[in-house]
Picture 1 (spheres, rainbow, N blue to C red):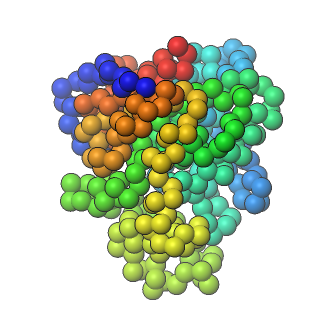
Picture 2 (cartoon, rainbow, N blue to C red):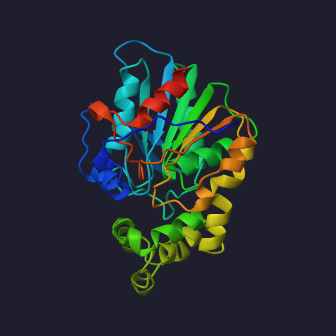
Length: 317
């Protein structure tokens, strides 16, 4: 599919990717009432789902997936939910395992390519027998999970109509290498701090799985994926984990209309994370590469972000 020309023109002071990313992550706020529901999973662990609803009865649902160490009440999730609620969609915002304020039950948890939980959420939404049109929007890590899910499934539910992926690190090893550079040290250290906090809680519950000495040896995100993510989820090492879970390899198989929005000044993304060849080779892939936007920092007018407007346009056109 030919690449899509973007129309994003941010205010001058938000053309800087660092400023846009930090403002969107730390300053932006969105008022939205959500109702929480707990979904028990097939392995007896759980996901907490945060619902918000259209003011009118609807058969349309958007499922929202957050990023690394995020949650369903982050503004980049609630902003989308609010906009879609206002346009006749219910919204189901997923908190990945351990991200809702309560630790999950198993030693393993979510990761950048962990699709089984998304499959269960989609099937649950279908079982509600309320929604004949289901759409999914993923952000960052959640976007990689989404694209992998779409490309690895041989048959998708008929109710699933379209998808949107924003700021997606579709080449995980490359993205990890970018996050490890000096320019991204504040982000790298923030993510690592949050991940280590969660892992320390797991170590207390599962002392036979990981020792404190091993935990204290983790100094980088790559270390974390080597020591915990790969081992807890059955991969040989971090590189094997990245290789098997990068959504880039699954893009040719996607067979529903899917929009990818990756900003060219997103410092989290390596060159491989701009899948021009894959988009040109798949009629179902639509790729937008705005010059600005940072990482999930597509600031626009009236506290509605460009990626949120484009998601609504793409899904309703």
